[in-house]
Image (cartoon, rainbow, N blue to C red; front, side):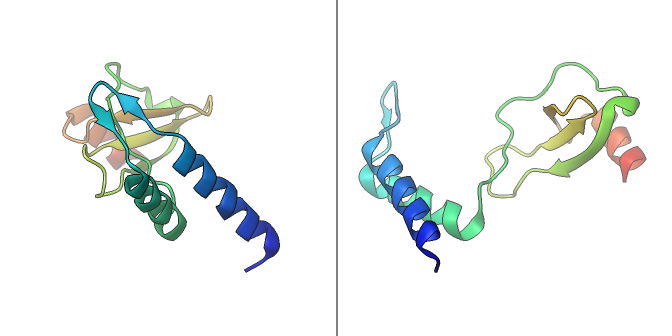
Length: 104
């Protein structure tokens, strides 16, 4: 492993260990931070959808799409637009399925 890779991992490890994420009663512990870091190192960051767009995306605005990882809590389709914006959509919606068929 190259020295800059080791340094980058060290910086990430420090960042994950020194910062805890608190949201109401949810706090990530040291071991949770380590597990998250290891997942990122070995599997890469996961793109997940936490909410879906409420508006239909015109076909002409979509460059390409990708499905979210099965590891995500919510299934989703990420559309990449011509304005370089990523929008999450519900794969169960008919308009999303039509858009996937058109862009496949």
